Length: 403
Image (cartoon, rainbow, N blue to C red; front, side, top):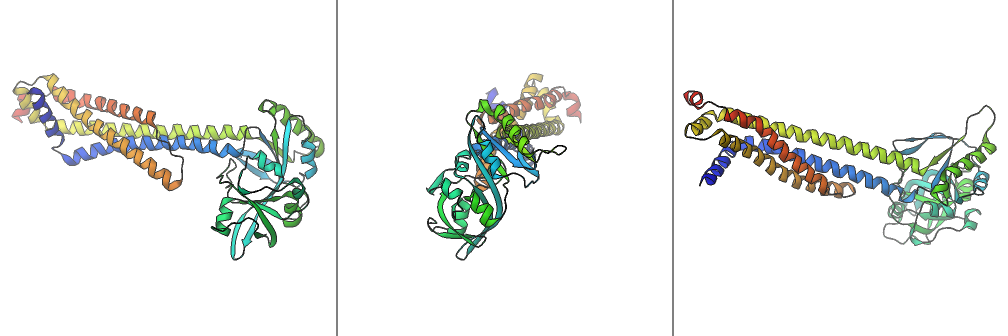
């Protein structure tokens, strides 16, 4: 009977001010939902980083013409040089531990098919580039080494280029025009997405290196050289050997290096570091949101004590103990945070699913973090109810009834 009466008093007091109850619960919902969403976004960012490196293995070294730096986890070319040559790529192939070398010259130009056109990236390279970058084909074939070095007018296109130019039509064997020059489509890449350098690998056309330098862009230099190492343990020694060879071939006394050597693992390290900092930042913001929600509950409970002074005084006059009053207000605070926490978890998961669908973001439903957020919320509820409960228990019944 006592327990039934206690529950009746509890729910009666809680639902007496519905708007106040809604606002206090809303603060908890927003705090918990924000934590769930932010943790999900942070974990999704880490997955996205690793996904970007599917085509940029840690066994890869990139020699870039001119000066380059890693900024925000991406290799950025600060200064372009025209001194990197095809002969440099051939010299690097002889280094112990190097298994593949792919010279690259890339640029952007208009690609056309019949009445359709697209402004896209054109990459001139060799067959080894596909293996170094771990590119696979959905249909067709890659060009041969003979085609790569004999100005062959063949091309492998990305998924986005296929969609833009051909729609549902089969592109194999069709002729596209790259800067008005006809090329036969011999292959289509699998869907790849954005890589570690920030480029959309589905929006590119890959052609033989000589076709790019001689036919399209009319240059006698290359922009970069991709080097694949046999074993990651040899990476540092290979980089030193590459640097030594390039220094001998390029450095003139008194001048700075006209090339930059970047290791894929360095880019990955910066990317992971950035993602971790991002995760910590958003998690901290979310915890602050939870604290704000808890203080909101405390404010509501203190206001409730002031409004219910006569009710508390009457209960104490009729025999209610301090303990009973404390339990009453503690239960109210716990109920608000518990119910708000559950709704926050539900709302957070719904928002995560919607976000991943709309923005094509990796879907991560954080179970552990959600549980921690819920427990923290309830603990905050208990702590936020302590002061108001004690304040209510200390009310003098004679003073409250007289007022």
